[in-house]
Length: 528
Image 1 (cartoon, rainbow, N blue to C red):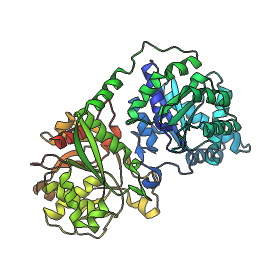
Image 2: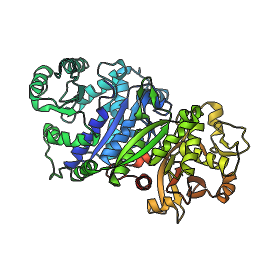
Image 3: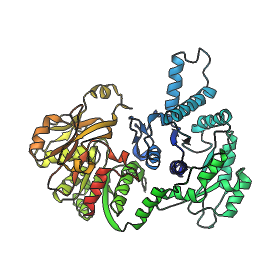
Image 4: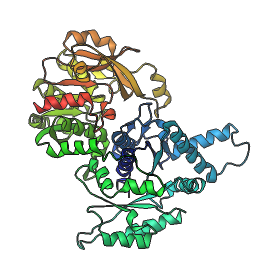
């Protein structure tokens, strides 16, 4: 089933193999027709993770980067739409030599070619390929066919791993193997068999059930790997290590581990998590939380992880509060709940829904000296709030919401008019890594400890330099600027515990072993 933990399992196994002395990269395959994740609703799909080279990908790519501590590039991400787009373009260019182009084998062959290219570019010993969706789904059958063909092409170099859920019905209290047995049969119906089964469950799988799965699933008993629920997903590599998962994978390839590091840094990080006592209460104000009766925190996954990484680095235990910006529009008095927080983050977003609530929250943080970190739209809203309440430009707005405002402090990026007019939305935002020069003596410069950095972007609207002088004269500090286009990247305030807004997405570069400096500085202020 979706959400079972394939991404975390892939990233964790990759980390374990790294610790054995091997280079690792990871590929995510998503079965939907979308060319990328950029045009999908975050509530439906979760976070859009942006790579260094500007690809809008699935959130699992973020997991790969965080665990493996490497940059994953666009070549490591594919969708059905992207694969078909390439096959059709090749056919139009007569690259198939005029022969009939068929779904099989031409589509699976394109998938394999992409895997080979990603492996070559990464110079990796191991390439871990996660196929999204579930076994037996019509959407991913072509990717399963690619896996079958790869096993035929490279019989000694390919292994298949099934991640399957093992329910423990409350009324019975016993872990059931039957759903996994059925999943294995379905997988075999696609011409594949698992070399390993990762048994996901609320509890660790016991020996009787390992034996049962081995008997009915054509998997050796020792190659059933338990993966129980954990308080932190960063514990998974250690759970795999305890079961010698890495050694078993290497053994299946007749490889040996290098001198063991035994996840020394990783264990140190987990010890820091366990020993953190002081709680820091952080409010995340957004609008992509609700999905029916459930809260979907996946829409802000990288932000949440970045807060955790920075909190642990500061010896704190993060307590996150999900706050809906629309509530402050409908019930203005509710804004007082922010007084109980140590810090507030407003992440990225699009559109008018909830924007006035965000602006009210930012005003409250500014006036009540609550540490504030605004990301992308959170930075733009901070500029609008300052213009409205300090410069008294009551109609100040982004032209995304009001194209006719007299004070467009946020406006459309140069060159974007044609995209909007012609309806070119997919892949046309300002995407990927751009340079940012930091002004001396600022909060941002102190946090980074560097005069120049690179950060990843995903936006279409920008700080309007026509109002820059007036805003700076009124006390808004421009502390970061893109040196190539003179675009404002960071704004901040003096005489405040911490008030910083950034046009980019620093959360995409935060890693558990390398927390992002801006988040670290924010949490340090919140801790005080």
